[in-house]
Image 1 (cartoon, one colour):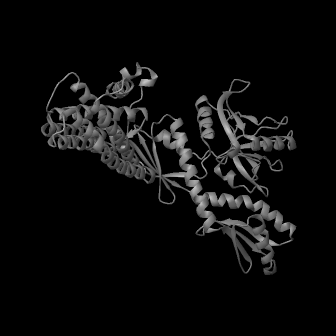
Image 2: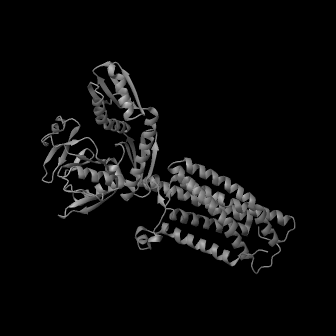
Length: 530
């Protein structure tokens, strides 16, 4: 007996109605869309090749990170060498080799073994070797590979957060090779601001000012090359009166920017734009210790090797909350807060390729995609009607709802539609009627065997169920593999394909069956128009 429970009937109707509602915003103009409720403003985002936009290829400077790590070991190595009474004439980081290397030039070859033990005690993962008076230490290949992989992943995540907070929708960010990142920004015709935002390392640290060295006026860039006291560097500071000076800042990082958990643009007590900082428990403890041990002493807030501000500790800061007053404009304070909040890039990024895709190319692609989809829909519809008559028309109605529900699903997921995604839609149109073909052929077999019409329909759906589930499940697994191992547009194709498969199962097994049962209700027929 062909029946549909009332709850199932209204569930199918509700799903179709919601599909129409959520797919509708894609047909509205931007002006009309803004007048809709917020929950109805989601549309399918167009990818770079459809919407136009910018393509950036970034190179991650991995050598800088290795150099910084070894530089941080210098002071500890110098101190331990003195404790062990090991004489040396040179202690530096050599960046001319294939990878940054810490080198110690000894006074005597007898101290080579002692120097190796000193370096191994600092970091056991270092590859340490000696040749006559020179002891060299570098990161091992295994450790370097792990660190580089982590740096690339962290850089991708930081870039993603920065771009998302700047208002760019659905950027495509992925790794390419060992040290490069691809960034695609749909809809961004002038990527200068985004490129500037991405490129800044925003590496912040809190260090003590070396009071033994006087500031040097920054009359020329030559001031940066003035020898600084041992363990310190001269860094540029631009003061509130516009005067630029180089001040001596100790290399030792007292509090790292990595312990920062929040940064917000605000105003200080004088009404000037500022940036408030909040540290995690580790950073708060270090900041409290730093302030307790240096009351009435000057410290430097260093961002990208420039001193933003060099205030004096007036009291112990217990709560881990601080404030940067760097004589900012409001926009500068907002940009700085965004960079610090998004996180520091672990390594500098360099733009090595930049391409802009014009909207006209995207318009051509959209037009061609629309034509292909419409042509596929018409051809499949005509084929179904010619093969299965009235039942073919029922399948075509379900096919139309298949497309509606597909766009509704993509809109709800805020998915990005690319050219491979359009190919996935066209493929879905052909696959959507596959289940109907299996069902209808089963029904024909039952009718040829002399089975009554209603029983033939019920038997056709029941006997075709296993085949339909198996065939769609295998395709769904293929889409899952593409999504897991693919990147960018390939993932978009996988999402479109998987969503289309799930929706086609619904339309074929539920919606088409409901249409047939509704058409049969109240009719007394001996043959079926199939």
